[in-house]
Image (cartoon, rainbow over all chains, first blue to last red; front, side, top):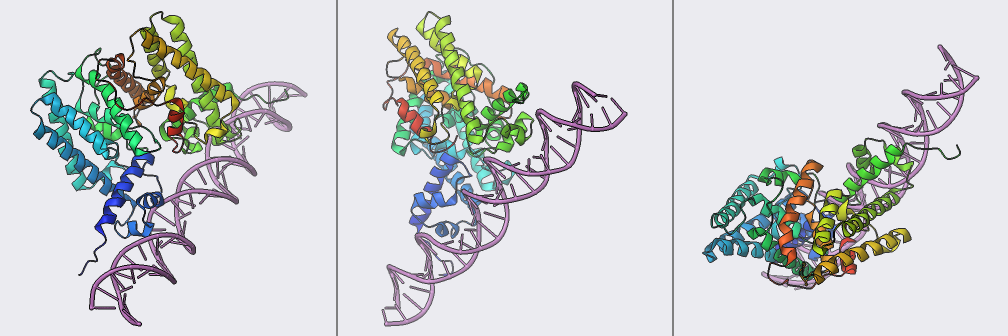
Length: 208
Length: 208
DNA sequence: CCGGCGCGGAATAACTCGTTCCGGTGAGGA
DNA sequence: TCCTCACCGGAACGAGTTATTCCGCGCCGG
């Protein structure tokens, strides 16, 4: 065997731990913490990824892919636009990987790989499709842009609860609180909807 | 003059900058960044506060006081419970100082000064009063606790937009989205409401 | 029983950040 | 005008933290 084969089980645990840790503490979080959460040694991480940045890139790719899958399955499963939209939201929330991690490039926007760039395009396209359809059907308020949805998602993530269990519970709790507003029951929204560039730009400088 | 008098103008700019920076980056943010934002040298900060921790404490005290004032003025200005509640929310949002900074103790809960502890008690008392009144009047959904409100607030803060102007706009935008849900138009909330201890506990470990 | 592939975690070298120190500057009195 | 002194900005220092590498160990297949 020319290329040594590492336990694939490890890969999964590492990426999952990295997602969790980066989501909570930002890119500045120590690699050792990721290793600890994954229950492996730091060397095992560096044996698979040349450096921290590439690990983060991998996490983002996985998370973005997950959101894409969630969107595609929601479109496929629901005929009604609003139902598809809602299913997408809940799906992402449950996937937890969620948008919180997808969002921040962690480093300067320039260093994003072509692969991730493509995935982002696809993800945006899908979300836009979901939003537009629901809006056309009069089931989603007209003054809400697709990038708004993204930001709202980010906000749904509670800080750092003790356990992930509880965090998930709170996420669903606050999503429920948001849904009536999304359907358009309130006053018109002040301000202008962000565009995607703004959303990405907003999250670059810091880590979180 | 026995005690030298420093420019009070500086104090204000320093605390305001510290609030901004801590809110965005957490307690881990470098002091130098605060100094830069305030347009002063680091020494000017240390000339007024013995160390970073005390500066943070000062920020929290100022922010908590501000929330208290906002609550008191809302209670005094509006007879209708829901109106008072809504005014409180908007007021805090506009004060921006807001809850994002009030919340995190930044360090272990033990090290909180007696003064701040007292302010917190008062703040919680007031928020609870606002929530209970609105709930009693049937204007706020019954399954929403006062600590929920606090967490929601935290979530309203957009990450790090380029300018504060835009951030404020987005905060108001998303508050609007939340209001219908708060009034009780949606499905019952899943999960259980957090209590205040949980809220504080949730935000201790990390910085943000 | 032996060889070697991974593994965990200690060791290293760089870097960041809190805090302190120091020379500069400008206002005000002589 | 010149001197003094209070105050300022920013460079310097030392402690602590972290990405990355290195090394000896244990397990698995033969």
